[in-house]
Each structure stands twice: as C-alpha cells, then as structure tokens.
Length: 377
Image 1 (cartoon, rainbow, N blue to C red):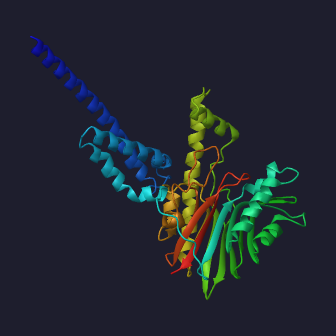
Image 2 (cartoon, one colour):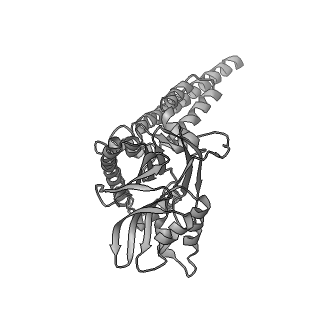
Image 3 (cartoon, rainbow, N blue to C red):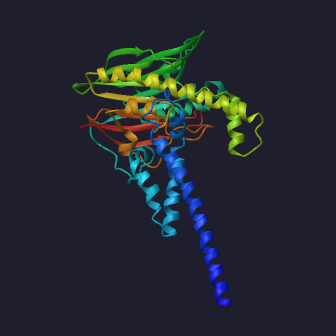
C-alpha cells in the first residue's frame, strides 16, 4: 500500500511539472513572437504599421528575456532552449547594432587620421544659464579637449547681438577655421538650429529642407588631403513630448498611480507614431542626397531613433557605423527621462575605418557627445 501512494504522488508531481513546463513554453513562445516582430522594425515602414517600430524600441529588453529563457531551459535540460536561441541568432545583426564587446584600442597616431565629434548640446543649456554659465563652459571645454577636425552640433544656439557669441566661442575653443550654420528658428537676437565646424577647407555648402518641423540638414563638402569628403549633419524630428508625458512615464516606471491612464497612453502612442512616420520620410529625403554624392560620405547627428528603427536602416544602408566598428557596451547617447538609447550616430562610407569610439556626458545636455577617429583605407 505505501508503494502505491508513492506512485500516485510521483504521477501527480509529473503532471504538475508537465503543466508548469507547458505554461513556461507558451510564455516563451510569446516572447519569441515579440522578438521576431521587433526584428521587422527596421524593414517595415512605420507608415504601414507602427507595431514593429514600438517593439523595436523594446528590442534590448525582449532580447534579454529570450536569453533568460535559453538559460532556464538549459538548467532544466530541455531542448526548448533552441527556440529562443535560434531567434536570437536570426537577429544577430540587430544585436551587434545594440551591443559590442571588445578590448580597448590603442590611440592611432596616423597623421591622416580624422577626428570627428557629434554632440546635441541642447542650446548649450541656454534656459538654465546661471550667472557663471557653468554648463555652457563645461561643454565648450569638452570641445576644446577633444579638438576634433570635424564638429557637428545639434540644437545649436547663438545670440547675434552678443559680440562674444557662441559661434565665435566654439571656433576659438576648437581652433576651427570654417563653419556651416543653419537656423530653424530666429527670434530677435536668439537663433536655434544646427552647425558644422571644421579645421578643413570648405568647398561647398548646401541646406537640405526636411519634411516637418526640423532644422535643415547640412551638406558640407570639405577638402581632406587630396580628396573631397561630404559631411551630412542632421537632427531628425523628435517626439515632442510635453512635460505631462514625462511625468506620466516616470509614474509608470515607478509603479505609482497614473490617473487617466487611457488618455495619457493614447497621447503618448500618438506622438510616438507621428515621430516614427516623419523620421522615415526625412530619412528617405536624405537618402537621395547620400546616393547622389560623388564623394565619400560622413553622416553625423541626432536621429532621435534607435539602431532598430526604419530610419536608421535607410540612412545606414551601404555605410559603416563607428560604434559597431570600434565601440563597447551599449554606446548609449541619450540620458534624459525616456529610456536611455543610442540615438546619436557617426556613419561613414566604407572608404574609412573607425577607431576609438567614445561617449562623454555633460551636465548641460540630455545627450552624450560622440568622438571617433576615422582613417582612410
């Protein structure tokens, strides 16, 4: 009789384990489906559907969950680990655009090396300037310390009535001999836009008008040695989140009570959708100029989109990514309220090889600067 009771308990335990396994497998399959959909975010235009674009934003988290399932199934000695593993391998390229592991590089000493810096300076923290303008000076000092050959600034601010205006200060700090600036908004003495500074001779300047409320993208041809290099400096449209959106997101993350959840969520999704679609259109506009370039191309700027996005794929086609070639970790460049992502980029023609990709934060901006060394191959 005791043996029979033991047999019944054993059978009950097996049924319970089998049920838990099935539940775990169903959850796993759900996250595999989410991962597969997120991999489509760079291939399906948000004008057709924003579902892949939204899941593309969550790609790092969805990939991490699938990796966790791989470990769980391995611990349980189940072949189900192959489901998530194969899906992760399928999206290997997407993984590399988000995460890199490599040993530190030795600094290049090549005389023909080209140092490139891109930085969204958030108007040099104009709205929070104190009497000593500490944050502005800190950003100018970072530019001076980096001493790049090419500097691309987004959210550039200038005061035309100030004789020591920021254009002059940046040129002096960085030792730049040339610049190319375009303003999106000019009110009285205040101007806001985008700027490219360089130590190299400028051969040609052009402004590219983009769809929707964005500053023009700058097309600047410079003489690099005996060759011409075409620089694109761009700032794609943001989501234009209001303060209420950020407060809602903060409450959501901290699991605090969020009143009028449906309205706030609907408003947030509407802004996300609008941003995805406009940036896709802006990317296509820029792509025409990139394809028409008779010279090697350098693209710098704030894309306001992640490496999983459709806009990134359109702009990076046929290009190299400085982070993928010489970066480490996740290369995050945005450090504001919204989740931290890599949304600032240095892309370039295969004529070059990148090294020493670094990012550096500043108290005055919600973006980190990017500095990379390019070497002509």
